[in-house]
Image (cartoon, rainbow, N blue to C red; front, side, top):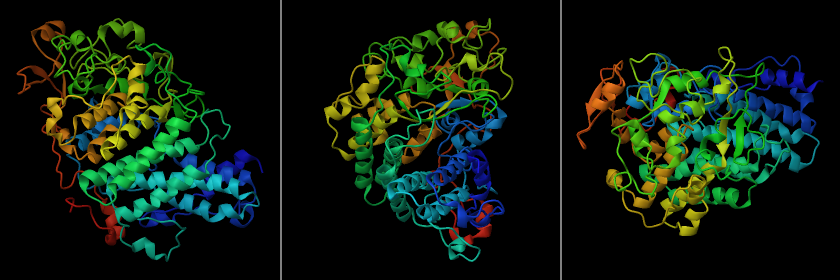
Length: 586
């Protein structure tokens, strides 16, 4: 049978699926391919696993290989809208605003990135139950089993991060399976299974599928990066929220990241251009062969496209909180550096700062460089009330900006790729895990954080750094503060910030109002058509744009007794009351 036809059939037939309860049992008719005759060759296993990749295209059900949707509703870039990194314009992004402001309620049914996707688990389990029937070497079978277990472990880790306890299922269920009405599996038990899956994947997956990173399949190095991410989350969660063996998880995170750093074939994308290297590869359409990218989602006209460029750059903007976290060029926080020139005018914000700031937020002089917005005749920044392309804060985002992916293109025909796994994250995971363990050395910083700083010409981080007074009350060392800052800056708008604040038990930072650029007499004269609301910073006495003033999202809240976990939807509780609701959501 033609491979393409097989793939399409298995996209329907092999996904025979899990959810408490109907989703666990959803089936498609087996009228074209029989399980009794299929599992024979390596190609059969590869085609089956192709269907797992196909399922991950649904970001909302299976948010692990999280790229862009066909529209702008769900993107790896948009995830920072749930955090203090971004301000939002646009009614279609209400979901993110609800989470950011703590105004979300128990949903009637599973929503975005919600308590669903269990059919994906069933698909994985069906495969794992049948791979060994193929008459091929065990090493080859284990490759595909490793691929499937990477998917399962990653999926469950994502669900645990949001819901705590989860229904761990590792076999195909039937209509009378007792698991359908069982309580959720305790978090620590579920995560022990996750670690088993990730360890198997990191051991059995090949170093290279010989696919040329076009992109192809997840390899062993990708499994190590996923493992380091998952273990870092779990280790810090247990350290700050309570739980057993936090150090074990942190050590596993550091070990996985170190193996990738020292033995893997990947490296940072560096040409020596400190003013462009950081965002250059985020702004191109083809990432094939890029040395830093382990896995990415490709979009191509006529096959799979998106509409992320225009809405992302018109709807989301950076916040005052984000912009102020970039260090001065001497490596000191702006609260301590004599080089910081303030924010009286927007141009001042960029002076003597980490070059990543200007490669993330639009400097007015860079409009022509980026052809922002499509090279129109307007000046930037633009704020609410000004014609065309206003920003909620004045801090337009250029990190991913690609005019070529908009010029001459119709709605929903964009091809901007989504970087899902990149080498720079491994360096950040490694440094943070060791710092949390209290075993980090200067050498560890030099092979991780300082490589990232070298790319942009910033001074090296050392073990003895001064405490930024803004973070003195966080309850962690000055070194951990700086490693967390580095993570925020380097991984801005790559889907990490909200989860980072939760695992660090720093949710109270989401109670800070969403502010934008300085608003003074000079700004009023410079932007005469602006219609912004403002607030006075009680610390400095200066006035800033107050994005959410007068809106439903004003006065954000973060209830530490409930908001670290998401609520279980009412529809799931109705089907199986034994799964129980998360604390504070009753």
